[in-house]
Image: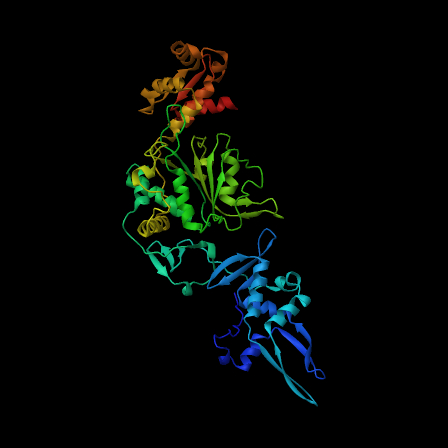
Length: 522
């Protein structure tokens, strides 16, 4: 974007300011003199020059995609939202610091040097200028404000002392002066940074929840890097975090570290608690049909974390948000913003992800149950992560590890983790436990060798109810075939059904039986 010409600044010693400098500093108004009375008779403010002066200070109008008008200030490549009152305050401060202007006035009887002081300018300013109407709408930059974004093969992280440019080949410090484009001031992490190769407590925590498995650690690192990569021109997927095991009641116990993973991402992108680049959306009762479903987010949001979604969660309703962009609307907004974001979903139970469309939009990572509600990371590491107990070394090791996560993602993409126990959990949550054990036992001989076998439905049902009489009721018998189908789908066992004198349920069916079943469906 085109910046405006620098105006001279007031020097510490007014005697060093030339008359020309003073004229330039006061060049935002004109006046007329009364020669007879030797005074200034009329003072008129130049609204366009005031607007240019404010733009020279870095203030601009910023029109957002939702039809709103915001105001920003750009200083040293850093852009931050501001408010009308602060723009007016800045101009008032400018006037307060002006040197007095000496204006010579002459007539036939003599001459006088009239001293125009800043206090007189301020008193006249508000009688003639309506800032909101006359000035602020003119703060339109010559070109669109360029915001620096990540590219397919690079990522920037910003610290107080310098920026970090991450590529597949390296992690390099970069001075802000060499950056082309502006960055949001809220993206600057409020710490100085020194790169450290030494693994820190957070990296060890990641190893804990990966069960000390290098392949799983690499997968989780790639997911963290993906979430931090502010780039969207590739197939987008939601990071789906769940637990490996369940408690005795058949549900995940929680406390395994999913929330801490989210906090780590937030520490990398949010400068304060009020920032919304990383936004947590409570998952319980989340209604995905409402356009205010992400009302906690705003135009700066790039990562949405749907935390602890419940069993009513409709994954399919989220597909467009994952791949095409999230609809972000706060109640007061004229129209919603639709913008690409990275999605993170944490869940303490399972949902059906059997369809290829589900799998294509998710990367499921199961956290090892190393931690629980009774054994937390603070019990092992004796300090709160990201808290006051963390030293400068802890922070540098954490930031360095997250840089390596981004580099791994840029180099290798999302690394698919091997599934451990998700479908078994899904079976136990979806189907009666006794039924799961019974069918597993009946199928085991044939599934190990992937051998075709025909089961007579009525014989299979009778065998089960004889063993478990409590299920000998109309409701269960009506659902029995559905349960068998569901078991095969969750265990990815090929099957087909054939109607005959004795209806058959066939696992690992031959081509001829598949064709016969298909023909019967017509």
